[in-house]
Amino acid sequence: MIVNVTQILLGNAGVTALVGSSVFYAEAPTGAVMPYVLVQQITGVPENYLAEAPAVDAVRVQVKPVASTVADLSTLADAIDAAIRELAHCVFAGEVGFNSTTKAYWMPMDYRFWQSR
Image (cartoon, rainbow, N blue to C red; front, side, top):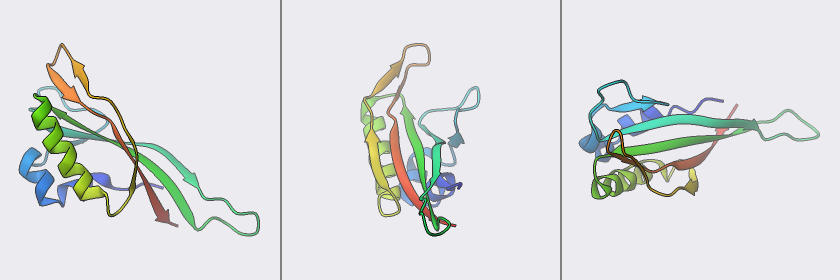
């Protein structure tokens, strides 16, 4: 039930042009330079049937672009969406957040993937 969104993003020229290889699971390492992307699987649920074993899992992954300006955040969010939209459905795009300690803007974006078993 694991979707490798990191590999999808790092395989996309539009995303890597903005963040290089700075795509991290759940949290960025200390000293990470913005912009970067955080990826985390939120849920993984089998599509259950009464008559047979599930053939597909619905996997929800949160992708969170992080940048030092709203403009950079918007550009990165658009690149992420372009990289993922043909493979999954965007089911949530949250409000822009700001961390006053790190001076970072971020926006959660949740995608639902259907993965064959």
